Length: 217
Image (cartoon, rainbow, N blue to C red; front, side, top):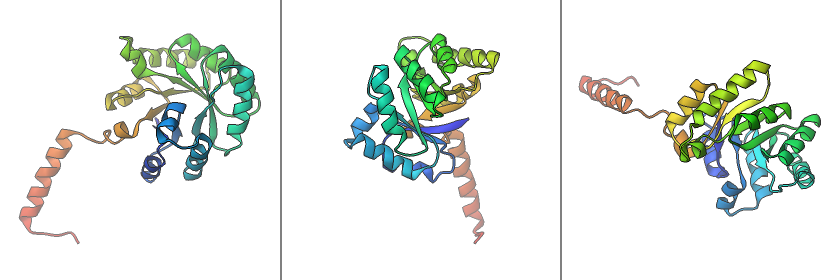
C-alpha cells in the first residue's frame, strides 16, 4: 500500500519526506485555507519538496471552468495530480484530462457507482471517504471492498485511494480491504508504529541492558 500524507502544511511534508515511506501528498481547499497562504504558492512549494504525486483540487463546479483551472494547476509541476469532484461535470473533465495524459484524482466518492464511473472516465485515483461514511453510520470499509471487487472484475487501472482516514485502524482495515493508497493526516501517520507492548518490551530491554554495564560503542 502507498502512503500519501493529507496536508498542506509544508513543515509536516518536509518532516515525513525524510522518513522514506511517503509516496505522495493530497491537499484540498480546506487544508490550504488553514495554512493562510496563497493556494498556487503552496502547491508549487510542495511539488518542489517531493517528486511523487501531489493532488491539487479545482475550485469550480462546472466543466468549462474546471478544465481552465486544471490547465493552470497542471503547469505548476509535472507531479501535479488534478483533483476533481465525483460529479458529472467532474467526470467529464476527468475524461478530457485523461485523454490529454494528465493524472487525476476523483474525490468525494461515496458509492460504488461513482467509483465505476470514475474508472470508466480514466481516473488515476478514486478517493472513497471512509470516515465521513462512518459518521453517518454507514460502513466505509464495505465501500472499499465493493470498489475493489468491481475494479478487479473488469481490470480497471484506477487506484483506490482511501481518504477521510481518522485512525490507525482505518489504515490497516483499508489495506486488508484492498485499497492501493491511503492518504493519512500527519497526526494519524505518527501513530502507525505505536503499540503499548512494543513500549513495554523496550523498557524491559533497556533496563536489562543497563544492568550489564556494557556498551556497543
